[in-house]
Length: 165
Image 1: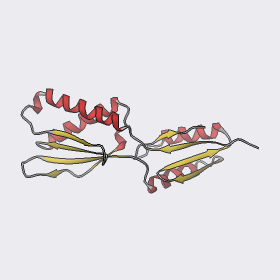
Image 2: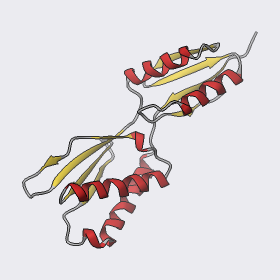
Image 3: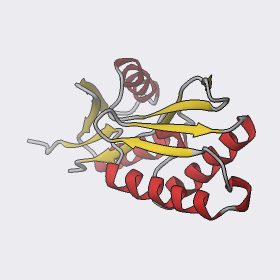
Image 4: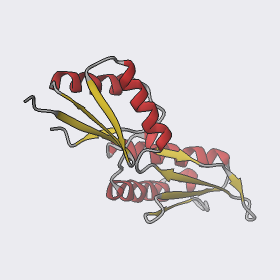
């Protein structure tokens, strides 16, 4: 009987790394001259997996986002794992934006991955399990081909591979 091999396509972000990146971003904001006497701040809510960014104006908001993306990238967290909300004005003349950190794949994202794998026409099976996709097949080479194709496809969301057996 042939041995079946499998791996999971997931989307999990290490919150410890996000926490460290936010702290490094805050430290950089406190040291930069252009943010001196600014009301800018970054606040991480780990329970809700969100980052709240407050800035004096749109330009400073863009700068804070770039600093945060740079710090996250240095900690191997893809910018695709961030879902940016709408920029809202507040009473004190500041602007606020909430950034949601992706954890798990939505059903639409799982369906998109499954459809793409089936279009490859390899002898593998893709099945949706909660917030991940399990890909199984008889040949490791087919699974590695699927992994490579998923890496090369420019998906609009963050994915990673786990439980490769």
